[in-house]
Image 1 (cartoon, helix red, strand yellow):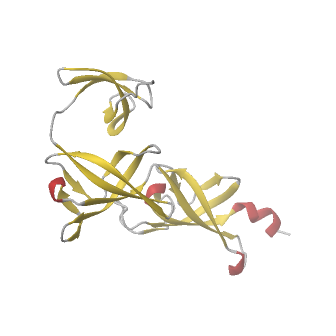
Image 2 (cartoon, helix red, strand yellow):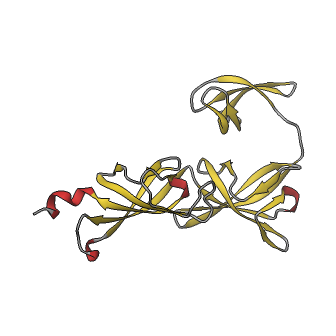
Image 3 (cartoon, one colour):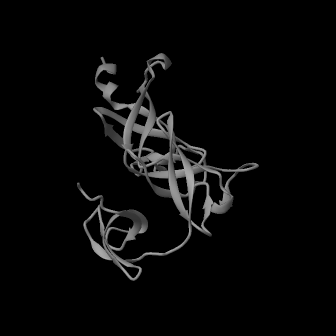
Length: 216
């Protein structure tokens, strides 16, 4: 029988000092574990904390569908809408973002784990982005919509041209999701404005693929 390697989410001092990545636990002892980053292979020590944990159901929304998993959250941890964490599901380890916290008497944006009944989230490791494409100088009825699967950290920039799944287009505007944090506006339409895919509700763009045929 193959032994399952324990995995934990910790920051990697080599490739990801500010964001947790998946690590394999190689050895443990005295609370200090030797862990190896699955992203870059760097091996380092990590102090494992021994605390009481609360098992909480986590509802994950992904591409219009949802499923439920569970997460163990340390005692005293305060959860908040907008936070992201690694969730170990039956299918894969995925990055999710908290969209709502359900308590006994309703939903809130922030609460200690002890009060939380259900954590509602959205998968943000890989996301589907809807893009509305219009040909340059074309009629309104020539506008079409495409959906692209991209990493959550893929960046769209107003004024720049992207080439995804054989479609070439220049971004003209970006409409952000309600749970996007750190932006001054929900609509970005100035040259140089940028947003990562996991924060994007829809991209509006000029269809560069149509340039050749629209000129005839």
